[in-house]
Length: 253
Picture 1 (spheres, rainbow, N blue to C red):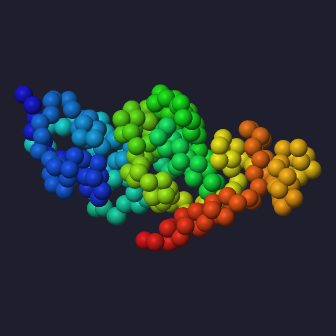
Picture 2 (cartoon, helix red, strand yellow; picture 1 turned 60 degrees about the vertical axis):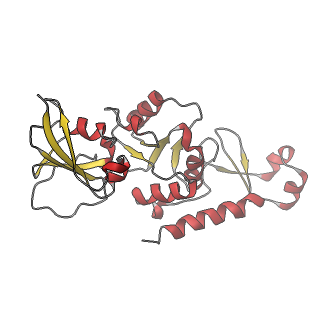
């Protein structure tokens, strides 16, 4: 016989629910042995988005099994939780010391923008879901995706579901979520392959530069991984303006 339980998602997690279930308790039936993680993910909220779950007012881990009449409250990952009179079981992992990411195939523009800002990002247009999960685990990289199904994989510990669809807003969203505005260090990475750029003498590049570039520019960088050459051409002002826009967004509450 199924158990009847009630669950409610707080502080933005309910935006991941179907519209008709947002902003109110959800009354549903579960089979015996259903865990709180099972129920949350069956309602489209990946475990990587969850920091604390209370059942009947008691903080529990993901393996806690539900019983008839239980009331379950689910809270999101945030940088700090308000003090609680109850001991809390934190379900989100400790913060990684280095902000490194792996991004799914749909987030190529976001990957380039994060690289522009100096962040270590793995992205390929042919990367598979299995590779994304494996890289995230092996290299302790945060998996950024708009596919919540990948984040429901049990092996994925560090992950974030990107809500926005516009690249500029996605960038602000990710930097705000991981508190990275002060870590911005632009123009140090290759936008194409993620390699760290190195200064290179103009003399060794003369055969690779357009005549106007040879005439007007003296400072160059090279990516040792893909051999791409960078200089402060007409594109630089546009990219610099983007960097400043992102920095300004970090000052807005």
